[in-house]
Amino acid sequence: MAVLFFLVIQILAAAAPKVEKHFVLVHGACHGAWSWYKLKPRLESAGHRVTALDLAASGINMKAIQDVVLVGHSLGGLNLALAMDKYPEKVAVGVFLAAFMPDTRHKPSYVLDQDFELAKTLVRPGSLFIEDLSKAKNFSNEGYGSIPRVYVVCDEDLAIPVEFQRWMIENDVAKTDVMEIKGADHMAMLSKPEELCHCLLEIACKYA
Image (cartoon, rainbow, N blue to C red; front, side, top):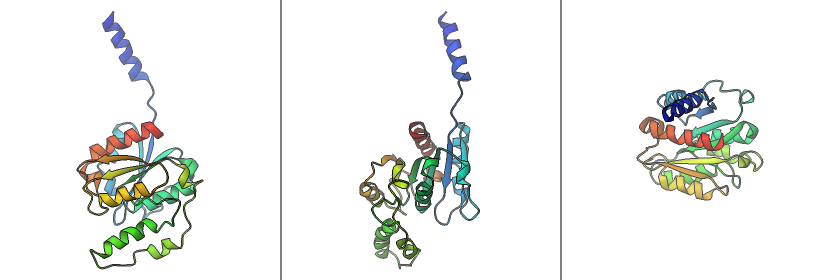
């Protein structure tokens, strides 16, 4: 009888429909959709839909998607914030993976300004595009500020040092959730794809 009960439970569990999540992956500077090649199949094998954007191309039609888990890496965090601010009703959660994460109190250039000051002590400075961003308006509380945010800290990141990652988290007035991948460098999707996949699945279960 116990065996029969166990078999019935297994059959019901197998028959239960899985809720598919939609992950949209936004790469950082000097990268492309290819940078997610280790992570994308892992999320797909878990039964989810994955769109890896290539920002050099035409991108994605945000009007055609709903309740996405939006993931931004490195400089892609600013693109993430722009999408969240413009289409807050489309995004379930914004995930900043070792990324620049702006707030709603300062101009979008603020986090780059802080990192730029640090960089000037290490390398010859360049203008990047901080000047353009300094002219942009603050992200709104009604748009960007209304969406849950999760920051994934990579503790061996040399591009965006862990101290600066934590500074952005502490500087954010919103209660940003924090997850950490031990031993991950700046390219966690390549160095720790399995651990990153687990993080994103956990985030999706909680928010999407």
